[in-house]
Image (cartoon, rainbow, N blue to C red; front, side, top):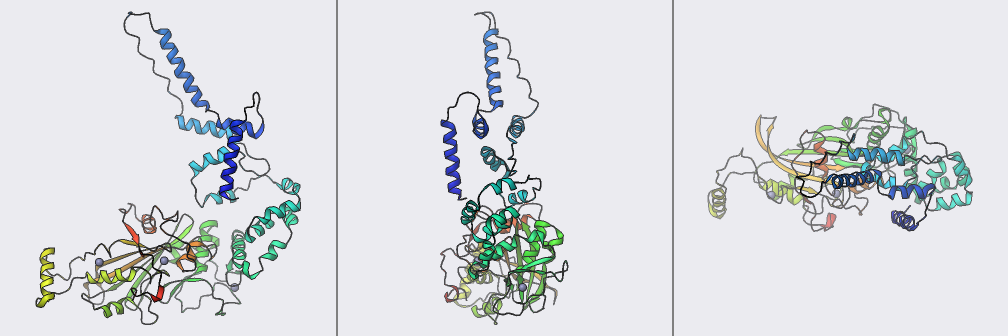
Length: 507
Ligand SMILES: [Zn+2]
Ligand SMILES: [Zn+2]
Ligand SMILES: [Zn+2]
């Protein structure tokens, strides 16, 4: 139901009840809601008690000028804390469950529970696990096929097919047409959504996105993420060599892709149990390529898979602009060596990396105008050149950056690291990227589609998940006992200019 409609319904219901002044015994649902809207028993008791205390005080008050009044007796200690007592009482009063649907009939209770349960993705699963719901076949059968068809007409193709498959009675009422509708090419995303809903009953299979059907897992339980050049089929798929219909995957770095199948496996295992897939720590990897070293780590938070990729390389001081490009970009495809989301060309990611490289302390030339500038800077900073000095970044390149168009954050650091080759400490640039890969149900999910640049309606600063707390902050607090100090997160693209490859700043 449309949430707006639902609230209008609730408000009108509330008004109807408030205006219905029906004296005497009230029955059924109305009585039950008005019961909930009446002042609470506990409050009435309190009021009565306080009034009686006042009365007692008045009664006990002696006539004028007979000395001071006796001290007030302390009110008796309640057995339970008032809020706890209220909750117990409330539960007892409102624990009425619909005999047919197994759902709470009290709308007040539903609203009440919103405050205590918290709106979270996992709420849906509580209902999924409720196997003790009494059968509602009778009620379903009592509605005509025409009415069910009307109900289904309000649903999208995936929801309508899910409704039709919910029980044999519903299938008889709705017929096969909703399954047939999923076969239309334009309904492919709905077909994937519908099929992904069957995951729970298919632990030995995996939904293949190019085929839109389940295949048997041929490496069940031993699936491992491998470099892109290694053939690593997780099932026998007729589309595996079809270049026109590739499986969805996300580029991590050169030669490293994250196939969507691994997000599926991880999130299935998280939702239903280990036999359905993999744990997030089995996805983490360390690898080296083109003088860059990379480390990836994964973590499930609030029903979604988060990824961190740390990429690092040694950087000499005083690089020329072309040397900076050589360091940051691959000659093969002019992508950065470090891990980046689809929007890395827009905004300030590459300028910030170059700015960070500029801060690496360099030997000073002492002659000429540049030398004078350096001497002034050195005096200003109060230090002399030291190649091992800690590099301090500036207000432009130091802050955490968040891509406004997808759930990805970046942090650029320059620090001293030991070079294993010669055992010396050298300055290295580190670019860390945190991304939310979504719930792994379908590749059309908002997070997965956004980080791959497949949709442009995502606003990471307004999206409920990260409006208040950053992805990096959530990720890091899962691995360290103490919470990180809150860091300023600024937009990767403050001007929101979207030029992509045509832009001038990225290279
Ligand atoms: Zn397939
Ligand atoms: Zn800077
Ligand atoms: Zn992005």
